[in-house]
Length: 118
Image (cartoon, rainbow, N blue to C red; front, side, top):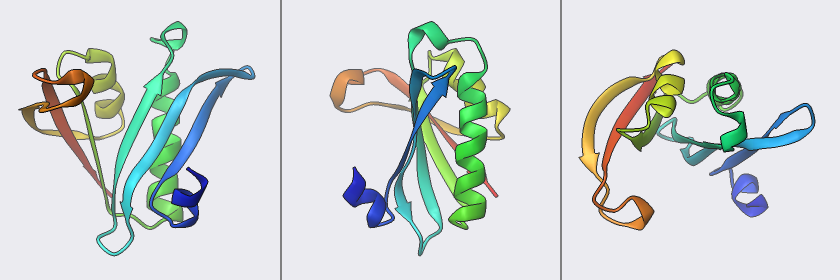
């Protein structure tokens, strides 16, 4: 993880609430030439519906646009994950399309791709 940050291709941030671990927010597949990255995150269940994801995403987006000078952020989530969709949409992401995960733990489930332009 440290090597990926040193290479400038991944930035991972710990989300804390009152000194408790609440989740992870990351910028992955950072491409400084194309000025793009993927925003990924995970919030621990006890911290759902508290606005933590929304605030952490705001901070990661600010870092991406102002510190890294990126122009486009992409993200994806399960189409059925209304909480994740809400976090992304509250931060200005727009839905591009639905798709079906081809592998991994979400294989054969419907996902939603979203994008945010600076």
